[in-house]
Length: 165
Ligand code: FE
Ligand code: FE
Ligand code: MG
Image: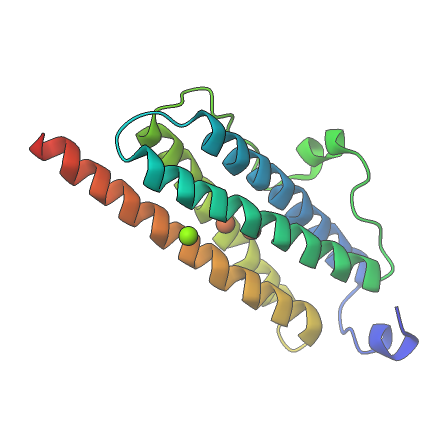
């Protein structure tokens, strides 16, 4: 990273890199959870659920790219082995072992709620100290808020359909 770009970061770079690598692992795990969920999904409104999960998978992969880029700019190294994702993750991985749409949607809502907390805390950590990371976290947080909303709307539609069936 450029020397001036690094000098203006007003908190320990190592602290920031630790948090960013946790978020990076979270994004890959979220990507895979959505990607596989979209492959296995079964049940009512399957097409709508698959479309949403597929779109979210792509967003999480894009987030992984954004976070990796910032880690590299700061002179860090994105987690190099997938095995490490499980040791550094904040939000973990909830395997889509039950393919029923309602279960998949609920698992992913929980994941999004964790992601919202993660980016909220990165915003608090970087406020007034690292505007570039702050801006990135704000963009990602906006997506995660939208993801939660989309999934909760789907869950509501599923409930309505099942309760009137
Ligand atoms: Fe994400
Ligand atoms: Fe998300
Ligand atoms: Mg969506």
